[in-house]
Amino acid sequence: MSDTDSIPEPVPARPWRRDEDGPEPKVTTYPRSGRPVLKVWSHGAWRRAPVAARQDWADGRVFYQVDVRLSDTAVEIRCLFQWPHDGLRITAGPTPRTSQGAMPAPPRYRMRFR
Image (cartoon, rainbow, N blue to C red; front, side, top):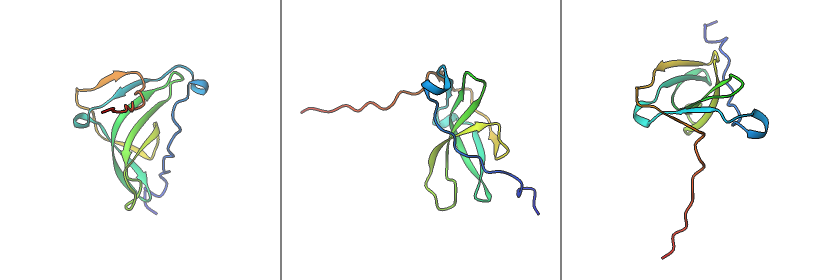
């Protein structure tokens, strides 16, 4: 039995909801060139997961939004995981170039008229 046999896989969390989770979380976002990196334990292997954002919820919980492939054949997806968790490990810290702000706004779609 290896030491990884007892590591539980982290389960992606649901997004923050104003009506259920209280005040908007404090969000720290990371530029592509300065992201911290986590490892996510999934399907028997550690998967590299660059962090897009950290969310500090009003109730004290912390979540990381990461880009990860959860298996060898999966496409990369963005997942939200609660921290700390035995199935998440830090591999690289952020660079000093981070930005902080409110929750990212949904994309705005503009119609072009010719």
